[in-house]
Length: 96
Length: 331
Picture 1 (tube, each protein chain N blue to C red):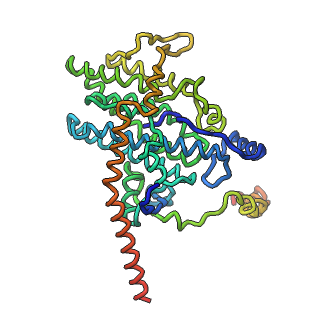
Picture 2: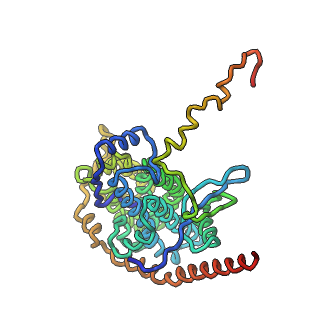
């Protein structure tokens, strides 16, 4: 096995154009944030895919556990009163 | 570009029948599997192997074409080839990052490529002897790759499928630039046309081998199909490629080097000669013309770059220290 130090992993987010969110596109390895940004430009925006890049150390991302997805998101499932269709409004009132 | 299907994977798995049935049900509902989802060990192992081989193929695939960048016949051809080789490097990186979501490290994958343990597509173990080979690679090798990769965009593993969508978007220029090179040669002097025909003669059969062994010989295909890692069989994809490519050869007046090639009006498929599987096996086993050179060149590049990686890490560590001291001073 290699004895070299590991180069950190970064997650890359790109905003395709103003008005849209930054969106996760993949990851890459780089020694620091400046090099991660430069590598992200070369790897993920060779054909005008964006005008803004975020890079975040993968190790700094806290993620929910997919095996607990059900109990995590279940509380929202039975709260139908959070949706507009739960409320009865006569048709005569028109669009609301 | 592409690695052929999958070379020697072990998809055996030890989970309970109930776990496997639940997983299969998710696959059958066309649900995508994402990185930390529960998955059978065999599914993970197959994907690590396949995505790894695919990534290695992109990286090694830069070598035969890189061989001609400095000797491209015009500036137009040179910038196109540079952009193509840069894309192949990028494709390798998308794929490594997809494989890493399955818990394998980049360092481990790199190590396995450099020590010869990992496989990559047999096609890159053939030499690029003339400029026409660059045309043939773009046209045939990338053409075969596209046939293979389009169904992979619907692969059940999310990160692999997403990487393939990016790759497929970028590949179509690769094939077109290759065909344009072939067309220019085929329409040139007799000597240039001969160069194009010679390249087609040498790349045709290796390109057909890219689809992997016959379905009857392809042992891990069934499990990969059930898990929807793979959507079409090797032979189906190979036929599709032949059907698409033969008329393209005819259009530019080149002859596919197969005396038994015949259109069958009933099956709507081309009949062709048997593929030389002994050659395929020899190349996969490491005895192609360029196997040793490719691994030697990758090792050379990796070793020569070691000081850059070390310096970058040292620089990052120094800056982190300096920032920490500055923060403390400010507090």
